[in-house]
Image (cartoon, protein in one colour):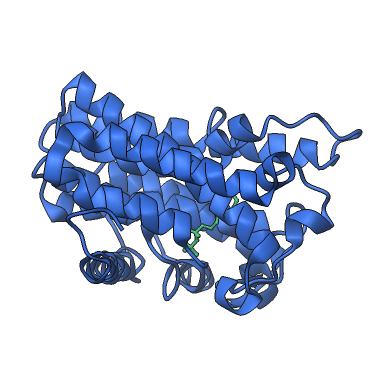
Length: 308
Ligand code: GRG
């Protein structure tokens, strides 16, 4: 744990943001109609709630809240951005679990959405969470300056789309040989897109909200890049060494698919060494923020040591 933030303080802060995110998502997914909405179909709402409420570490909203705190941004604004990001994360998990993608039966210790409902409902719930994210992130309450909202919206779109998560997902499927022969995989590049882009967005969102200097933005981007890679290596290690009960899904999925991962490339010891290097890089990136970077420093260590 980084100096300045005890593991108890860190766990309390993470829990507080998870609780606030849960409450906010519950409100955003209520049955109350927004202007211009004709109906909120009960089946769609129930499916969206099933996948986005009552589970998850809420790490991405936490990164938004804590990166925003560095610049003294209001918690309410940061939580809204965090909720938008969490909607995209939940949509990605729903679509990733579908038979056409990873065909998974369990997520967060419960049947996946398409198992609990059906494929069509799961596709539509994912689509509606993706679009809800952009509805949320453009709201006036996020920042009085429309340019700030525009920059956030563009950054979130790029993190989610072609050069981000969706692009990374198709590279991953190509590497599994889904579209013919297995395509060679550049694990670091794939990860930066598939899982890294959303985590990185969480880290730079605070800088955008706080109208930071370019140097501060770059520092948070570098921090987010190191944290994102550490997150993925930890995920690859959990697939080899993890416990299915703690994970809420079976371990060993990567090996069953013959996937190229950080662990297949670096070996278990090499992967652990790489995490240590990335943590040092994350600490270094935060050095310009002094004690204000303590919680983010602790977040990188938490991500690297996580058990689920
Ligand atoms: C379907 C466009 C599309 C993309 C899917 C990110 C992704 C691409 C799929 C997720 C698959 C997966 C399980 C990747 C491993 C890393 C990861 C995102 C784990 C889950 O994130 P956590 O640990 O989950 O933050 P919780 O449940 O805590 O929210």
